[in-house]
Amino acid sequence: MALNIGMIGTGWFSKVHADILSNMDGVNVAAFVGTSQEKAEAAVKNYATARAYSDVEQMLDKTKPDAVYICVPPFAHGDIESQLVQRGIPFLVEKPLGTNLATPKQILHGVKKAGLLTSAGYHFRYTDAAMKAAEMLDSRKIGMALGYWMGDMPQVYWWRQQEGSGGQFIEQTTHMVDLLRCLLGEVDEVYAAFAHRAMQDIHEGVTVHDVGTATLKLRSGAVATISNTCMLPESDKVGLAIYTEQGVIDIQPDKLIVKEKGRMTEIRNAANPYLRESEAFIHALRTGDASGILSTYEDAVKTMEVTYAALRSAETGVPVKVGE
Image: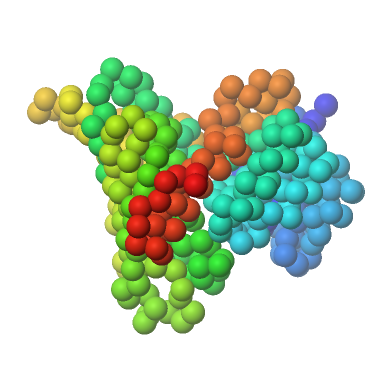
């Protein structure tokens, strides 16, 4: 019997996921929920089995989906997840989980109580680069890591507002924080400095910081620095470089670069990480085997604890213990 999947959100990510799902055997994209009926109607045009809704509760009542993909801006999280938890509907949610930590922690309590199957959209974990890096790091001593997300400011209104996106470190650089946790282990303490340098003068209504850097102490004893900016005219670089006693393992969006003993090896991503992510989630829905899901909601909350600690540290000027 085919699985019916509901899509909440009508932006770029919902289309990425819907395209992948619609090409899977035994999977129907059953519905789109938009902030307006017009947006939902526009989103369903390319999916023969999908119906359009402007209300989450109505979609759940009429479609009765087997699972839901949540692809909404950070500020829109909370009520959607609560409805799914109450009904016991599994979900895959795009990052970040919110603009603050209170909402995800409340949702997590319900997810754990219900024993609900979840997945979080940290697609970097599913890249060939990250998987190969994990293999290599098994036999190396990790000293430190340098992460970066250096680019321009996304052209959507909510991203520029602190209450809309949570800021660049929470909304975007979270991918590098998550990759750091995945490969180097948990973070105990964060000290961060963020600043407003240019974007408030260039664009109207900007309240997010446009530069920032965070120093992280890891439980293993390793240290890391992750920096970001959104003040550049175009994207510069994104990645996580890990420094070991044997050389450098540098994870970039499209490849892995390994520098050891005077040699440089480049391994390009072959598989689509978004496809891997959905295959793992759909397999878990069908079989109950969730071993292929590399980031659950609970794990994503741990990443959110780090990014939110960075924001709190930047606001207070003092180091912040993660989870406190």
